[in-house]
Image (cartoon, rainbow, N blue to C red; front, side, top):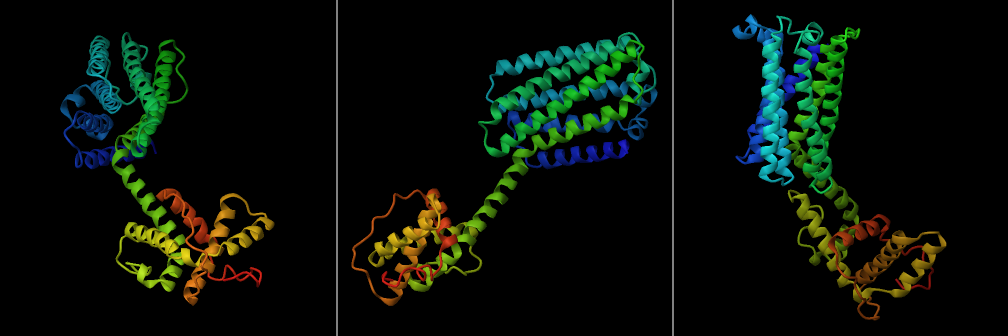
Length: 382
C-alpha cells in the first residue's frame, strides 16, 4: 500500500512538472517554481528501489541515495522559499540570506554524511544507522533545514494570503498547509532518530510513516505551486456558473419586457450562440432601459398598496422593496400593453451601481409575476 501511494505521489509530482513547465514564463519566480517541482519530483523518484538499484553508483552504495534525496529536498524547499519571497516582494538581500543559510545546511549535511559512512541499508536508513556516529547529527541537520525553511514559507504565506488575489491566495494557503505537514514529517523523523540513538527504538517502521507524511507534504506543495494556473480556471468556471444562475433568475422578467416592448431588445432572450456574459449584460441593460421607458406608466398608488400588503405579510428590508418593485413593474407593463399611461409624470430613478442593481433586479425577478397586481384591491389602477 505504501509503495502504491509512493508511485501515485510520484506520478502526481511529474504531472505537476509537465503542466507547469509547459506554461512557464522566464521570470525569477517562475523559474524558482519550475525548479522546485523538478527537485521534489526527483527526490521522490530517486528513492524508488527498482530505480536506484539499477543505477551503478547507488547499487554500489545504496545509502548514498538518501543523501541525494535529502539534498534535492533541501534544494526544492529553498526554491519554494525563493518563489514566496518573489511573490511577496521581498528584497534581494532576503534572497541572498536564505541562499547562504541553505548552503550552510547542505555543506554540513554532506560533511556529516561522509564522516558517518553509513552501510548499504537505504530502505530503513534511520532505524539501521541512527545509532551510528554522525548519522543522527546528519538527520537533525537535514530536518532542521527543512523546519527552518518551512517555518519561513508558512509565515510568509499566511502573512500575505489575505492580501493576494484568489488563485494566489489559495496557493499560499496550500503552501502553509504543506508546511504544517512538513513539520509533522520533520518531528516524526527527528524523534525516531533520537529515540533510536538513545536505545529506545519505536516499535513501528519509520519509513512508511515518513513516506506518507512527505507524500502528503508534496501533494499540498505541488497543488499550491500550480494553483495560480488551475485556480484561475476554477475561478473562471465559478464566475460563469454565477453568471448563468443570475441570467436564469432575470430571464422571466427580461422576457416580459421583450413581449411588451420588443423594439427595446437588441438580442432576444432566447437567442442561441450568444456568450453568457453578453446575454447577461444585455439582459440587465435592457431591463433598466425598459424600466426607464415605463416611467410614464408608473402608478405610485400601486406601489403604496403593494408595500402595505407586504408589510402586513411580514416582509421587510430588501425583500419588501423587491415586492413593491415587482408589483409596480407588473402594473406598469400592463398599462403599457393597454396603452394607458398614468399621467403622473416621470418617476425618479436610483443612482446606478451595476453590481448593486443586478442584485436588486434578481430579487425583483424572483418575486415578479405579470399577474403581480391581481391580488390588489379593485379600486387600484392597473
